[in-house]
Amino acid sequence: MKTKDLDKDTLYTLFDLREQFMQAICEKVPNAYPAWPVDFSQKENQQALRETAFRSMEELFEALLHLKNWKPHRTGTIDFDRSEFLEEMIDAFNYYLAILVMAGVDSKEFFKAFKDKHDIIMKRLNREI
Image (cartoon, rainbow, N blue to C red; front, side):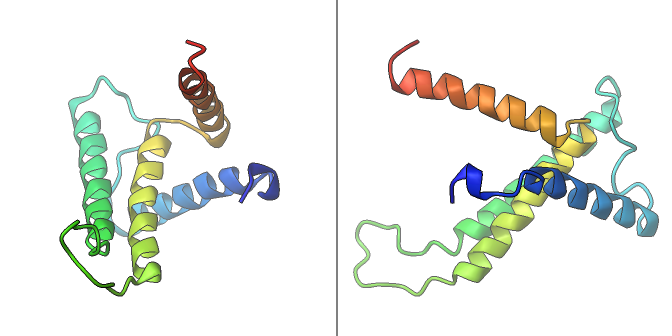
C-alpha cells in the first residue's frame, strides 16, 4: 500500500488509540505507565521505558516463533498462520508506540523523524552521502 492510499489521519489515529489504551489501563492498574511525557532524568522513568521496550521485544520474538520454515536444511512447506503472526507484530508495535507516547512524541514529530531518516538512508543507498 502506498502512503498516498492511507488516510492522512491514520498515523494520528494510531497514536491516539495507543494513548487511549494507556489511559484506560492506568485507571484499572495504577502505575501501569508513568505519567507522560516522562522526565528522562528520573531513574524510574528510564526503567519504565526499558521495561516497555523489553515487552515489545518479547512480542516480536513471539511473532518470530511463527516463522518455522527459515532453516536452510528444512525441506517441504510448513503452515504459516498469518493472523497469529500479525497479532504478535501488532502487540510489539503497540509497545513501541507506548514508548513514543511516554517520551512525548506525537504523530507529527514521529512522521518528520521517520521521513528525515528515510531520506538519509535513501541517499546512502544511492551513494549520495
